Image (cartoon, rainbow, N blue to C red):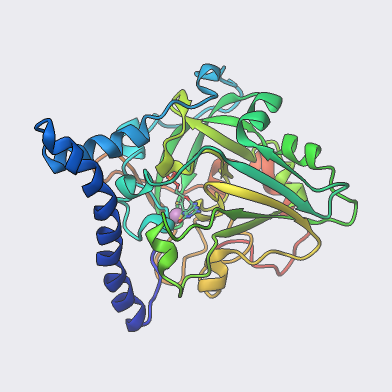
Length: 326
Ligand SMILES: Nc1nc2c(c(=O)[nH]1)N[C@H]1C(S)=C(S)[C@@H](COP(=O)(O)O)O[C@H]1N2
Ligand SMILES: [Mo]
């Protein structure tokens, strides 16, 4: 994401990096000291440790690959897995697209999800219990980042309406507010206090119950890698990618419109609805076309609601002057 930053922000960011490297090194050095005895270099031991963390068995592994729901079809090929898995926005782990390595520090088990606010009875549920209870399927969706690039991806997961149903919201609840984990000790981005952590997103209950709103647990027929927002992230294919919050720990039902992370940071550029529209430019760039990731720079015209209008347009027909696009 491209944010206009005050000079001081940038300075502080580059200052924070060496501390992160230093803290990690201490942990790695302890492991590397043992490894040296049997002739493994510290670099190898570090690489091994990173890949061990990435390859920890997932307790729901047996549910993959999930059966594909053939209803959701694409107008373009799937993006190659290696491209999607190595070009990510996940500011908790850095502001570049290259956060894969840093994101392996995320511990995805145990992972507890809190459901609270205006519900019959607040509760907590572990990710594996949740996934086994609701079951998973595969869907092919397009994803359009507000930065004007896009990808197509086979997500595995379940319709968000199932979670809303489990939550039993009160009639007075109008929105679902979602929160990402908060742990400075593993997420270097969260040590940058000028960002409004934790990452927050929100949708109306009607949007949460739309059939396209999908809670993602997996990609490419496997449990999702950490950089994609394991073990639970959202996919809202008709909205700009920043609405699709990663690594969710909390769903709160509320009658107040939640203020999202990007809206909080830069409300002139990022709003609540953030529906995809080629005719409404971002204040600093056009949204008319998008770069298709993995094609060496091919661009296609962007489609209203990212091509999902038949499913979602009716939700926005009565909103008059609201800022629906951006
Ligand atoms: N918690 C959290 N969720 C997030 C982000 C983030 O920085 N932190 N970035 C968003 C943005 S801008 C995009 S485009 C998508 C990127 O998802 P991907 O890396 O899986 O392609 O995640 C969204 N969800
Ligand atoms: Mo994005």
